[in-house]
Image (tube, rainbow over all chains, first blue to last red; front, top):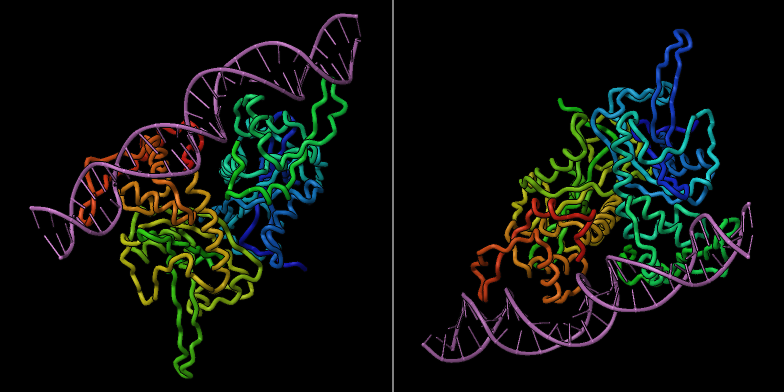
Length: 244
Length: 244
DNA sequence: TATACTTAGTGTTTTTTTTACACTTTTACT
DNA sequence: AGTAAAAGTGTAAAAAAAACACTAAGTATA
C-alpha cells in the first residue's frame, strides 16, 4: 500500500471564472453520527489532501485537482506554506488519522497551491464530496485556517496577474478581449476603460488575433484571440513585462 | 526538553549588501572522522535549522538569523517550500538525527525564507560554525538542494524589490540615493541612469530627505534619506506602487 | 594654500505611455 | 425593418521614461 507522508498536506485554492465573477471551489462537509443522528461535522473547506511519500507536493496538488475536475494541464502554483504549531493537531478526518499512524499531537504543515480554470471547463467529480463554486465575495466562514489560506491565495493572484501572463488560464483557449478585460476587473474589483485596455493589449505581441469570431451570441460577435506562450518567451526581454 | 518537529526545517537565504555587491551567508562545513582522520563532510550550505514543536516557522527562521547575526528586526519573508520526496532522507547531521527520533526514510520538508541586511550591521556569531559572506556570483556548488533554494530566493528578491519597498532593508536606516541606486544595480545586475533614478525616487513621498550629510568620505558628502513606513502606508492608494 | 581627486547633484528634450472620453458597426432576434 | 446588445475604434492632453554632460562640494596631498 502506498505510504502517506503523515505530517504534510496540500491545500488547493481552485479559482474559477464564470464569465462574470471570480469563484472558488468549496467543499461542504456534513457528517452525521449514525447512532445519535447528530451532525458531527457541518462546515465548509477548501480542497486538500495528503501527500504520498513517493510523490512531490506538486504532484499531490495536481492529483487533488485532477480528482475533482478531471482536468489536465491546469495552471498550478505554490504560494505559501502554513504551519502554525497547533494547526490540525487532531484532524476531523478520522479515517486518515487511523491509516496514517501519525502522532495526533504533531502539527500538520500544509503547502498552499492556487490554481486557475474556466468554471465551465470543469465537470465536477463528486466522489461523495459535496463541492461547488462559490463567488469570492460570498465565501463566508471556512473551517480550520482556510479563510487565511484563501485570502493569501487571493493576494498572490492579484499580484501575479499584474506581472505574469496568467489571466488566460481563467478563460478558454480562444477568448475575446472583453472576456480578458472582465477577468482583470473581477480579480481586482475595478472597472477598466475599454479603449485603453485594448491599446495596452495591442502592444502585447503574444496575444494573437484569429480570423475567427464568437458564435451563438445575440449581438455583434467579437474577434477571438489566443495567447502564444512561444511568442511570450521570445519577446520578453525584461524579467516581467506583463503589467496591465 | 523542547521537542523538535522532526519532519520540517527552515532554510534562510540571508542576503547581505556590502556597498558594492549582493552577498549571501554561507556555512562551510567540515567534519573530520577522529579515528581515520578522513574528512567526512566538506561542503557549503545555506543556513537552516529545525523547528521546535511549539514555535511557528517564522519564529524558527527568525531564531536562525538571530543566532547567527545577533540582529533583531530583520526583514524576513517566506518564499517557497521544498519537499522533494527524497530530500534529506538521511541528513548528515547525526546529532539531530539521534535526538529527533525521526524516521530516516521520510522526507524533510523545508520552508525557505529570505532575509535582507546590510552586511556591516552584522557581527557574525560563529558558535563553532564557519560562516562567511559570499558574493552571489561566486557561490559555486552547495550541498543538498541549496543551489535550487538560493536561486528561487534570488528570483523572488528580484521580483519583490521591483514592487515593494524593501531595498532599504539592505542599507542602514539613513542612506544616500547613490547607495539606494547601487542596491538595485547589484540585485538586477544592470546600470541605471543617475538622473532618471533620482527623478523617480523624488516622486516617492516616503523617502524623506534629512538635513544631514554623509561623514568620513573623501569627497562631496551626500545627503541622507530615511524610508518612512508610515508615509508609505498612507500614500499607497494602489495595491503596489513601488516600481523602479 | 593651491590643486587634484572623487562623488554629489542637477535640466532639457524627445519619445512613450497613460488617461479621459463617445459614437458607429455588426450581428441576432422579433 | 427595426431594435437590442455588445464590439470596435481615435484623439488630445498629461505624465512618465529615456537619453544625455556638466558644475559643486568636500577631502587629500603636494
